[in-house]
Image 1: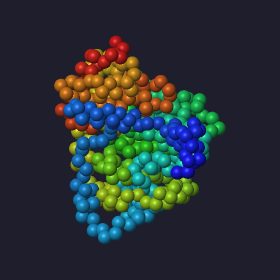
Image 2: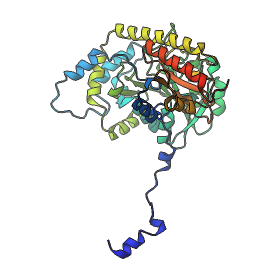
Image 3: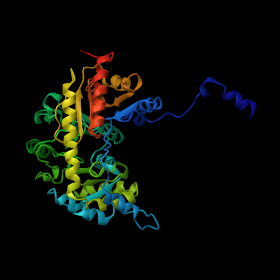
Image 4: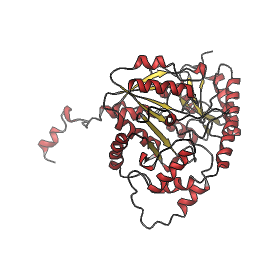
Amino acid sequence: MNPVIKSLFLLPQYQNHMPKISAKAHDMPSSPIRKLVPYAEAAKKQGTKIYHLNIGQPDIETPESFLNAVKTADIKVLEYSHSAGNESYRKKLCGYYKSYNINIDHTEVIITCGGSEAIEIAMMTCFNAGDEVIIPEPFYANYNGFSRAADVTVVPVTSHIENGFALPPIGDFEKLITPKTKGIMICNPGNPTGYLYTKEELMALRDLVKKHDLYLLSDEVYREFCYDGKEYVSVMHLDGIENNVILLDSISKRYSACGARIGAMISKNKEVMAAAMKFAQARLSPPSYGQIGAEAALDTPQSYFDGVKTEYISRRDFLIEELNKIDGVFCPKPSGAFYCIARLPIDNSDTFCQWLLESFSHNGQTVMMAPATGFYSTPGAGTNEVRLAYVLNKEDLKNAMLCLKEALKVYPGKTN
């Protein structure tokens, strides 16, 4: 290198110089579900067995119809599919929704790369930068990330553990509506709370949406998992706001097929779907093998779902009972999905969940949970709460609860 040029690079202004990342990247939140993975990996390398209650990865087997369709697919060239997804899949999918009294045709469906992409495309389609969307919190943590990517501001309306995270009063929503408010988003049944909205709650939301002409985005990926005889009501059942409603869906939990990455965005609003199609075209197409498996899985017999539902009810009942037996712990009984949020006698859930992996084990075992702070948008909320996914068998849940009970006895930040 020329000596003069070399000397320039020794000047202070050239030392450690590199481009800056975007403000959007800087502000993108870490996943509370996955951010502790490095600590879990380190614990496993030391020989500690970890019970993963931190992530909604079911241990239920994927239906054979799904797997066999992928294995036997006679494909010579793995081509792009239509950007909206295979027409045969979309048409067959309409029959599935009809069984839930959701009447749509295949032109009102865009198949996406998981439910995550459905949410992202919906937000980018419906909202401008700086618009506000009201979301009952705690909510699925990645809504924070998706909204940040779309430059949309989440305005939280807080639900409370004392009443099982029921929908906050409609008056609480109305107080938050400003000229920037363009939508409301819900998850039903809910992740992370497991709460199942009643028909009356959804009718009240409908009236508010209609009054202010807002979008209503509804993440309904857990509709198969409703318990205690309680009714699943979709936003697609709400009369009078057909053009306001966006349904977001995924096969990940329905068929225990998280890795297939197949979701759907559904709306009767033709302008919304035409605009969303441009985003779908920009990412080209959803996964081909995932669509093949998902289409075949639509023939899964009801007995599969009955068995899965019975198993989750058994796990839920066991977990909630064991949690509430522990001194200082409170956990309401969820009516849907396979999650719950528990309040613990701790100072800080982020610190506690990391401590469980870094500094604690009982008989060579520990438990991994998700700090609830990441499921809130309000700063400081959820600091003594954790989310648990009852996706493990009851023997593993039993051992996990024993670990939690013993951990709370010796945790330095215990509050009572």
